[in-house]
Image (tube, rainbow, N blue to C red; front, side):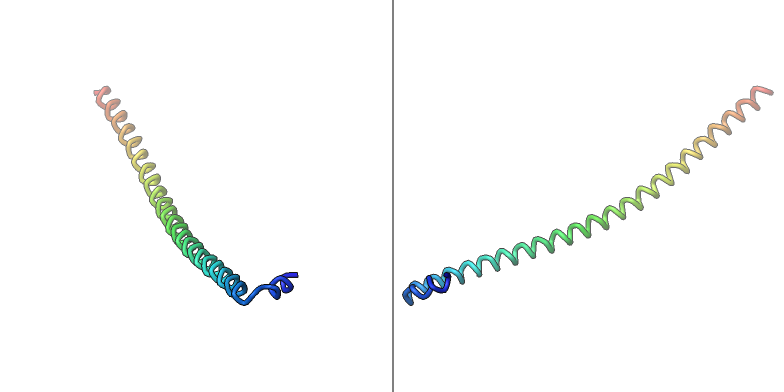
Length: 91
């Protein structure tokens, strides 16, 4: 069916249709390259974000560990103050 239609066209019409199809191909290929570039950029952003998340997770773990150490030191200090106050009251 498609071949029958193309055989009935004049040389100029065939040339025009061929040119139109070539233009569509060029446009689609250009769009495809844009999509590939966008995909590559997004992949890079995702990798960077994952790296940043891992770095932040490690940083959070360190801060949480330091927080617990400081809380422990505070509790020790408070206990020492109580102990010394009791000792002072016994004098």
